[in-house]
Image 1 (cartoon, each protein chain N blue to C red):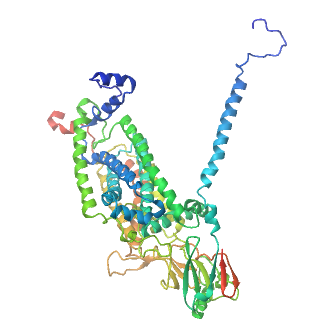
Image 2 (image 1 turned 45 degrees about the vertical axis):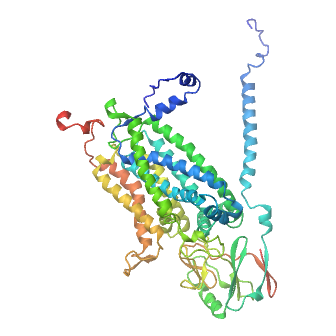
Image 3 (image 1 turned 180 degrees about the horizontal axis):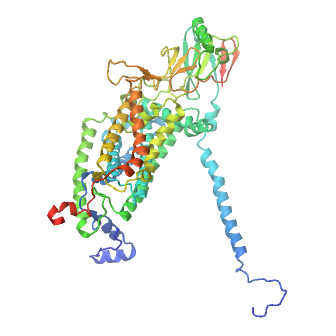
Length: 425
Length: 183
């Protein structure tokens, strides 16, 4: 960030290496001496937690490939579960690790949203994060197909058919994606190949993400840039210890799922081998896709539903230019804070709606009246309301609110709110 | 070069002609780009259905296996195929709705072979997102898709729900009164 390095090679070997490949210097400058804002709270530990998740998924995934057989996919997963030494542990770590990864990434994203971490000069940092999120979704989807159970198969059918909604080129694209006339073994084979590739692409973009972070510096809960040495603390030991503690707590949650609730986040239908002739009665994606699935189903038209779903993600990319507020952190934007809270609630409601059948009643045994195509007391109308708020938040509220609201006074520096009013003068 | 003769052709030293250098650059880049571009198609097209997948594209089916009012599901091109022996009541219900408000207008006669109205052959893949609809559910006596609630009538036409099109009728022909070739 500041550009000049304070690394002092201590041994002869370090001096020799530093003149040839200054890798120790890079590590020292990035993770030891790197100045971090002194007021980072626990919401800021999820970046480190996400690196841990990526490492865990890469290690367990590479091990699973040693035992997985794409030609006999369903049976080889059962072979991993029953016969391979500790196969059950490694597979449960990988399957639940995906859910943990998404829990962490959603918290990380909401944190960025609340503290305005997407605002200048962090636009590229934010967009790289959005790219990572997109790659994560593609990887998770293709990974879920690999066990080749009923949910794997029909999930793949539904998602690949989304592209069929595109006019003219749609059918050609789906045939191309499938490598046949339907989802079949060629589809599984290519998904396996891509599921192995994409995590390394994620790792590559993560390096760019951290690079961009270290160029512009970390944001912090006040949203005020560090101005003096009083505003920052060295990464080690302050951030490392805080990150380490957060990781430990996170790992306890992870372990609870792996050891006590390994299938709580999955669907029992996926333990039935894929059968193209029968669709499970209730087909839902993994929990982390539910909000987008609800947006898809909220729109009665197929193409418009698909566009709305992709548009929901596109909003994230455009966010740096949609929010017009000059104040970065919502800590000093009392009105925005309320809208943000509603946004989080809307996302959770969309997630709930995605898990339910569209025509089910929200309040049991209450029939109201039919509005257009469904009863008002149905999940389809609840998801329409929430989806409308989701888009309004990005496209209406953030652009207008930034110009209209009266923010609270922003502190002069990070260190100053910690001082008493007398000291402030 | 001080005493340049008037009227002589101006021939600069070999290798310092900027136009010639530019031509080599452009030609080299164009050749590399052309070679790269010509490789794009093989790398894209390899994902399309392979020759052995395409070779499995047609199948024959013996209709005597399907009793009146029964439906047989077979696998064709990796998708379910419904062969339904419709009852008189089902045909009558389908014909009656020929002029109803249909999302994807088609008469029942257009969806069967002439004189073979009892035989309805459909690709059993919902035109919304490809789930397999089940017979006997829904509001129109035909198929119902459990995934997103599309209702089809006894002719396989979309009547209600998110699906945009009728259940597709594949290309097929009667080889004899009791045998069809699909695909």
